[in-house]
Length: 289
Image: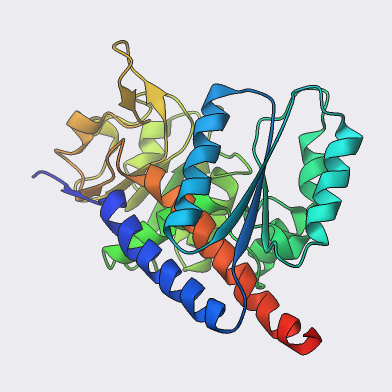
């Protein structure tokens, strides 16, 4: 059996079309969804990510503002810029690109973003909303993974899901989203004694640790859905995930490729969150006009 691919590029195109339609509907009401992207320093990878986010906004009817600062920008000055963006009615989402220079407390900066504009879903208020099932913004990468499961019609209720990784950005919120859909969830990590014993029981596996070949074919139950969040490089410099793709695809029922799987979905869900933020703000904007 060869697994069916979950095509992140194709799904992303579909969702971005929906984003553009929602943005167009807002423009009729006089609201242009706005995203502010703040970049501090000259990290090459961050520069690429930021350019992609700005382009995605332009391509789908959103307004974006890119603010770039040198790496010696003070924490106080960055916090002041975040506060100004919080108070800017033309900006509905604020994204401060991580990592930040070491002299800046990243968590303090994230917590300075107004929860209503936290389209990255990293604020404590967003995490609390996810935990308690209240409206909020979901972190973009696990949100994209959920959309991929939805796209293949996979019913999570009663299924066993194993999440490999416990980060605040992917692993923990991923587990909560799966739990909210009535899956039975196991979180594995570097201290898990026998990872294979856990994953072989799983109907769904989400690998999100940033380590090549952490999941191999002998660790997967036949027919399982495998979502690969990892972004690594092999010896030849080729992009690869956390999953031994060539081996696992012969056992799994569904699998995401790297590249072309979860990656495109992350920016797409950022657009979805930004449009959602603008829609939530639109009634209050109309009342104050």
